[in-house]
Length: 134
Image (tube, rainbow, N blue to C red; front, side, top):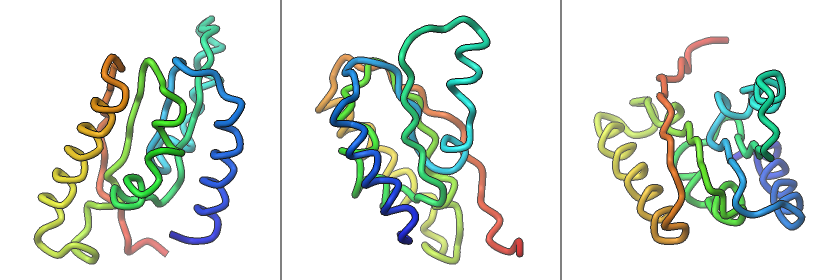
């Protein structure tokens, strides 16, 4: 993780201290961080509190390391997760990238269901990162 990611997660920790429990949470990597969820919700007349805890560039290992701040501390009633895009690469995990990704996704789901048993979980699609772009 780089300094920018660490700073975002640290800031989320501060924000979580005053956050309302039982709300809606969007979390994951860049596809979530950049998703204009609040704007879309407001334009559709949705008045519920929605938190976004997406951090660009995170992989599932880093998400698991920070799962308390990025998810569990908020005790949401609904979670929309988009994490895994940055795991879909042979450069980090070789030919084992798929099993690594699936193992971590399963761990994430198990942790959530253990800590917040009544939560609704929506797993969003993930797409491979193109690490060869300039």
